[in-house]
Image 1 (spheres, rainbow, N blue to C red):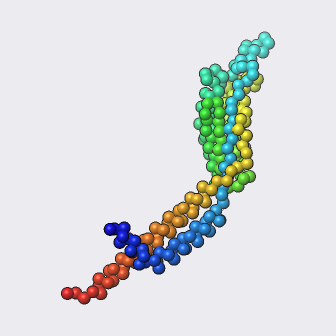
Image 2: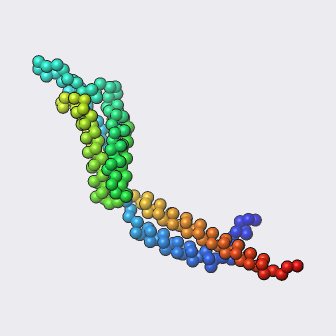
Image 3: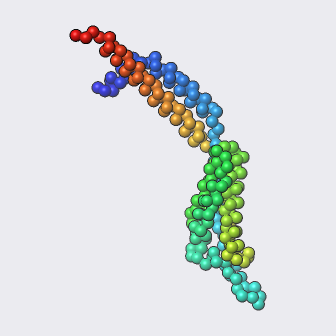
Length: 207
């Protein structure tokens, strides 16, 4: 019953609703055309243990070790140690409105997922994210005094391709405009109907 009354109201006030919906569609179309797509770049690296192990024994010297390789499972532990540091530093790479950088880990693997307004920006951020992982690992080993020959290294296992188009920004903006325009049209229709109903009541003779 309520739906029937509401539908009848929409039919009566189509002169209010239709123009507002048309304006909304034009605005949504302009937003879709003018909003840049954005691009996403993803790549994965893996930690590699040194071929000769974590201990080096120079002639006539005390043995030296890489403390990072003293854990088990070693390489997965290293990524756990690095993830918090790289996550904080990754935020410093975000310098433009559409930038986004996320670094995650799974076992000995670390994955960088970035977003940029252009293909070039996405590639730039992706390379910066990989460089950040390498630098964080090297700085950690250097601070522990690990011999260079025992250093864990980073190898790219999932080479990033050209950044993919990311229509999320377009869809979000167009969806917001359509929702706001639709609600505005309904609100205006109800408001006009309410005003007209009150006016009719005031004009009715008092008996």
